[in-house]
Image (cartoon, rainbow, N blue to C red; front, side, top):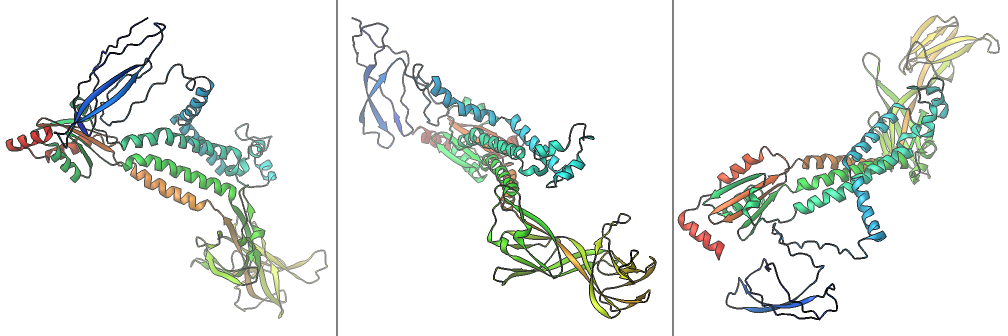
Length: 557
């Protein structure tokens, strides 16, 4: 038989933000019988206390509570910050949920998030993505395998090791939809989300709390601290409100902050980067692209030109639209060089109804139902002539490469017996659509004529009239569902980057008698912060003797 008598080494205080109370606990001895001195038995006490509210000092209430204590109970602690939040209870040593395989499973995601949110890892991922993008820019994309066989031969590897096998095996011929590039984007996106969840969101939660400090020592430990004798904490709150601070008062304590949006900005930056990566991935794997050169007067179907770029590419009804090239023409500088080229396009649906018509040019594309048609190039299709008042005849123009000329086209008009093994004729060359140079059977210069001039020229007994120069329009077609997302991501990135420069400033103050103790900190503009605080404190009025007595009465009462 053992008799256990309770003993207390600490005094317990009951705090309530709404009640001012003092109580004297009355302890009643409790006797229990235990079978072994090593066993732990809960001890029960009844505490009766009288609480006086601030509203009615005369009325009193009796409050009885029952507290159960045991060996595993946590120690009583006081929250020095004064925010009233409960302290977490330590886990019991013998519990089944905190250890073993179950505890390992619970801890595993947190460890993974911690590793993924590591800053050096995220920087390494960004550098890897940038290097892959640079490599994709250096290597021509979407070419046939024969092109890479010649460009990166095995007998003469680039940098001593880089051959076509690297390009085709790792998918560098379609870099931005290759598994390596998409995998790195996914890893970087995971790191950004982990950093947001483990670091940025908790910081915002902490910044949003109304964290009052109730001791002058804690306030003086801040980055900036000052004391104002003969001042009122309420006057300080008015001054801070005038400076754009959010101010909260609780008895003699004051808490103020401004620039909370700056704490949200890193989360916005991460979300903007995620939008950019999602949009880029959707562009690489869900778009269609194609190029076509169409002579004036002919047409084509959009779906016959567009080719998918990835596994998410899905055609739409607009792919059945027919495009007709009504006219192609060019503008020229005074020097004769090409200034701009234009194409008059008409779009027809399956019923042959014209649904849209527009004249496009470089940097002025046509957009229809998610498909964009760009003017990118031009060519010389055919030369329309009359020979000895017969015709007209269309002579196909072929591109030529002579002395490095980028744009040179030529055609040939046989003269005499066309069945002869040594056929001779008239040669015609052109660099654009505004003038044609003619040569005789011997290759000698014969003259220059402009299309539509109707001015004949006689060469080796043959009368020729250049009636028209028919050009071809070089068009690029593209569907890119990721473009709006990328644009939205870059817009959000610029906005949140600017917001991130806003300083999040926190100020605490405590009325200690007739003196106000002020402290504060900021996450940016730390050099300018003391000057800003001194200017604000200079605007706090000094209290006279009568105001001091009223102030002390207001604080005490």
